[in-house]
Length: 299
Image (cartoon, rainbow, N blue to C red; front, side):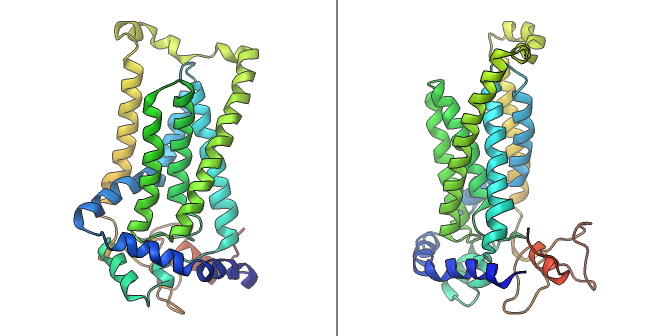
């Protein structure tokens, strides 16, 4: 990896150390078993196991006239947010996770272990979970607000709770989370206006005639239009449970940690039984150190 790029993450650590630690103290001081489960609940909204199925659901919604704008806004928002966070900023900043860089800070380490010692396998800045939850939440807020639905205001609250959960669980610096909120919001706004452009295209062409809802018209008439919202709600609930239930047992001693031991003992989750990241000399490593040991650089 390029040492010049590495200094960006180090610079962020030094510049915001006092701020980040003060926020860690705030969240660490309120730790208890109940809040840890609450944090795991909200953090699931930003997990890949939730986000990826939501993309699939968004594509499906695009084929229904009544839900098309929701589908396109979600889809564009997630694509933009993912590209900015995971393809551009994380490989540029190369910020190491706090549970690796703050291992010598007794208070932080106690809070990290107390929150379940969860781990990820990549870089820290910005928070991918926060970006994902925010881009989806703000996308829904904008669409529901345009339809004058009071439910719209629930979604920004979910995004903020997800952001807070990442700090509470001690897997992200507060500054990671703040930037994740910014990126997620901008991604959702961009997604919303991209949706408007696409909707103009649909309205002015035969694409506007596409409506899978016609296939379910008899069911819709019998249920007075209540079937579609019920199906969508059940789908989202199923997706969330798929992400949330496994999170209850994550972390702690059951995690296979990265075998890297140098300036710190890497507490990132190792890539186990992953064909893309095979074991090296019988040892498993996280994505970061596997690439280092193989002479790969972040793109």
